[in-house]
Length: 317
Image (cartoon, rainbow, N blue to C red; front, side):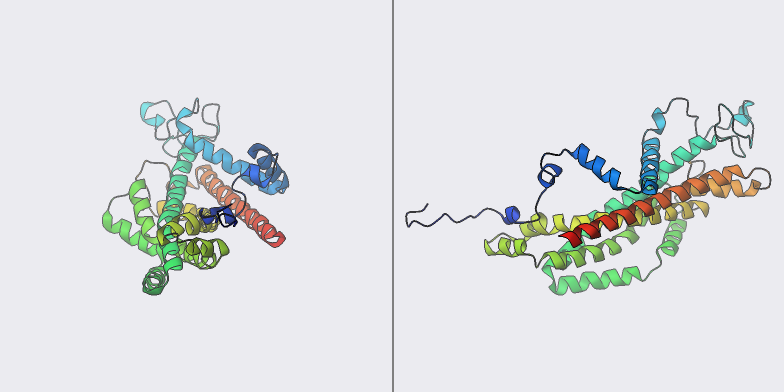
């Protein structure tokens, strides 16, 4: 109590007034993150569970490819040294067979997954950081800055991304994963900026932002502590939907011969290299096509389920 008998004024940042629980323990008292994950997994339809497990398998295999015991070198051409056969069917040493230059198909699928996932996750991260920052700034500060940024976004989005990627990679003449990610970043940020700006417009009118202004919190601090953390969930949800599109984009570029350099394994490149021998052996083209389909479908299925759960939770609130 003060000398006048009045309660003390709370001058702490309004983060205490905002958003609600920050972790699983606060959201579900007495429950751990592990049990919460079990509850979420239990709510999934059986098909979504299979898709989730498939994605876990693909991600782990790609991340730990170098540590998988007995996995062949994806670029080793055994027929050159007389210890391998071209277009060989499944065997004990080559579970999915070999391609037209006797490379192990399973090994190339796993290492090809690494290329696609690095490309997709890297671009999603760049979109969240760059697009999220620009969109949050535009949605919070408004004015001429917002007008300029959104005009730039609208102009940028008018260019077809695939055609732009093909043109730039052809002009550069260099094809490796780093170059592909950097070129892709040129086209990925506008869509994230638009999502972030729309969310920031909604968040900036919330009570906790008004409270932050009322106690004199700087605009920069409000942007960093109040706006962007509330924009981030929308960007993550958008990324989950966008990941399969990015995987297809990388596979398309590789199929066209504009992806990573040969002999680096990629799903699109494997399909392209196998199409010339389809009448001899169809499986080197079928396996990467099936793997690509299952991965893209699994991401889409999981994204639909997450979106449904989020909508149900919003309706309950």
